[in-house]
Every structure is written in structure tokens, then in C-alpha cells.
Length: 402
Image (cartoon, rainbow, N blue to C red; front, side, top):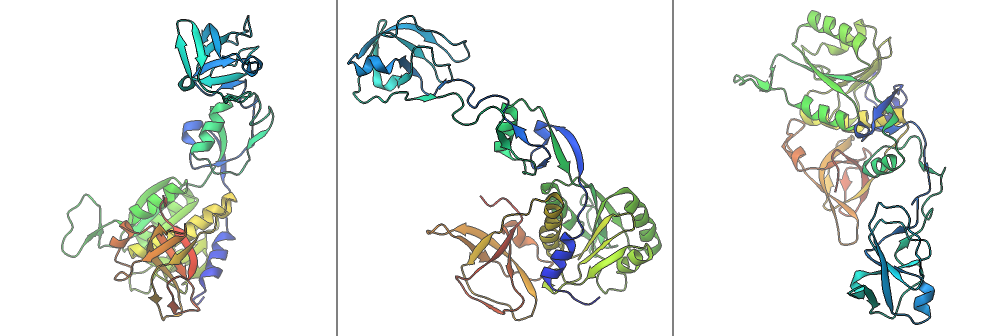
């Protein structure tokens, strides 16, 4: 198969989703995962008439009649049972989070009163009835759906789940993946390289990305020995639902992977995409259903392909497509080749609240230093060569923007 266009390659990847596992996990372990159940309120939100300011609680009708000084009948902290006042012409001192006493309906904060001995005097003339009280069921009623199945769980969702007593949640789990580096020139990161060697590094960036997508990962390395590579891959295909290879898929004399994958019966969906970086990107499916991403060996290429394609594969499989992000170029870019160009850029917000992209023109797909100061890739379409400042294009982030 010859080169295909970026949009076709992306659609092919998304059309071969995985089937996620369903697990019950402790709430603390659910951040970033997909909720597999609706969460409903087990009681009203809030569950009682809740005081929202430290101060005194009064009956507004007494204030409306002209009363400004109130004898203090009781002091009520949060976490105590509801109190019933004996005399509505009196007040209680009350703290934030406490239940509003029966017989009173309005809270005046400490800043607006003076307390002398056992009497509170109101120093302001404008008091609204029922002020500073969050009334029972104002937010949600018992049985209301608070979170819908399919949402990605983040910090706000943790609050909600905990509030309804969900110590465990049913969540969707992506398949475990193994990230495989290839090449005799690569050595472990704790090794001091010889002059002709480099440390394995790109796999750690890809691993971090996959972990962000909720994929648990292992590492493996294969030297350039075809027989050993074939044996290793055959075993790994049986063990993992997702294999991410780095290097060995181009046209070099020792790029054995496409041939080995074919010999193992892996169905190739495409090999080579009209894009930069990442042209020799390979994607296929093994007979047992294992999905195989064979990324280019250059670190920027492999990082880009993981950011764009593996993220899209995960989102399509979990039915959580990412929201489209548009950014405005802040300077002109010229790129004559008829390729989709994934250009590293940093993101900022201009004075009008628009996301702006500052592109970095590096020194090829081996120049990964720019990744440390970039936020993602702006996608420049293949049908153009001149991209003007102020034009808006799609953007794929690889880190949290703000």
C-alpha cells in the first residue's frame, strides 16, 4: 500500500477500536478513567438547610418589624442536630455548615453585627429574607443523575462520587500495552553510551503519553536480529492487547518489522502516511485482535504519532472523542511539501481570549529538545504551503494547557 492521507489514516485507526475491560476500582484510583455507570443523588443536595456564613440566625419577620437587637439563645456549631428555637424574637450564633434552626430563616454575618454580653445588635439596614442559607434540595433532588455513564473522571467528579458514598466505581479500562524499542544502537538509560550508541529515550515519552490516556505499560527492547525479533513479537502478541513499536519500520537494511509482522499473520491496515513527521508509520491488527502501532524511530515522529493516533484510538474505543481545539498562528509558516505538517508549538492566550500558537521550527524529527517547551502540535493541512499569521488551525495537545 502506498502513502495515504492523514485523515484516512486517522479514520482507519479509529475504526479498529479495542473492547475495554470493566472493573470496580477504589475511588482514589479512578481519576482519568471512564465512568461505566450513572451516579445518582442518594439524598437532596444540600441535604438540609445549610448555613453559609458564620454569624447569627434570626427570624426575618422580627427584623422586618424593626427589631435590631437580639438576645442570643444558643451557639450552634456545624455537625450538630437541628435545633428548635424557643423564642423567635431571639437569635442563635451559628457557624458555616450548620443546620438552620427551626423557627429562624435568615443569617447575618459577624461582620455586620456587634455582640455585647448576650445580645447581638445588627449594624446594617439592608437584610434580605433567607440570606446566607443554602436550602435543602436547591441543587439536586434525591434520585437526580449527577454524573452520566461515559464521562471521564476528574477532580470535580471525585467530589461528587464521594458525596454520595461511592467508595468504588465501575470504570472502563484500556488494554495494557507493551512499548518496544528496536535497534543495536540503543542502550538502557542507566548505561554510559559508547561513541556509537544512544540511550533509549523516546519510549519514555510515549509511555508517559499512554499513561495519560489510562493505558498501563511495560517496556521491552529488541536488537536487530530478525529471528529473535520474530520470536519475541510472537510471544508479546499473545500477552498484550496493544503493542507499540518504535523504529524498524522504514526502508533501512535492518528494518525487519514490516516483514516479521506479515510473517506472523498481522493484517496491515496501512504503512506510510503523507505527513511530517512520521511518514513511515505502520498500523495493523494481529489474528487474535492485538492492535499494533509501529511508530517511526525518531523521537519527535514517534511522539507525534502517539499523541495523535493512539490518543484518537483510545478516545474512539471509549466513545469519548476529545473536544476540537482551534488555535491561531501568531507568525507565518511556509511548508512547501504536499504533506500534513504537525508543527510543534507553544500555546498562549492573547488579549482577546484567543488561543495562539507560537511554532518552533526544529532540526528534523530527531530534534526532540523543543518538546520540552511546546504544548502540542498544530495541524497544517497538506493542500496549502503558506500559512499566514492570524489563520486558525486544529491543535493536538500533549500536555495540560493551563
